[in-house]
Length: 101
Image 1 (tube, rainbow, N blue to C red):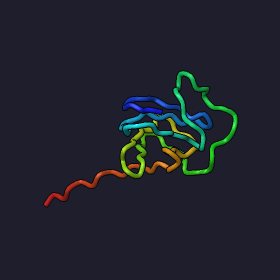
Image 2: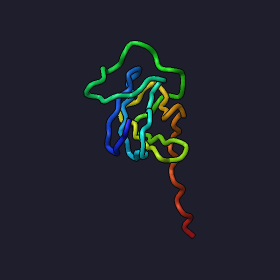
Image 3: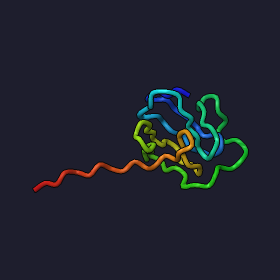
Image 4: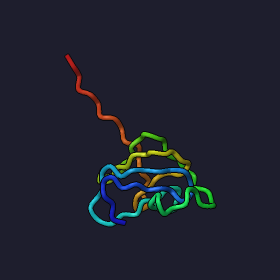
């Protein structure tokens, strides 16, 4: 799917909901718990089944892919891990502040 910043997505296997903060150019596949994510307006809240094992998502945290081209913000936590094109998204680390001498 082609993503744009501000797009909202919902998991089909758990309660995870995200907003795309930074979108890569080109077609990508975002999954949560091993199943494709969809539009919140057209996706049922939680489909039957269970997410693949993983770390899950935490509300208010940002997740990025390895090259930093995709960044998403979790607006509703869930049990399934996020992945982009099969690679799990990692928690974005805070930028270190400069030392004040």
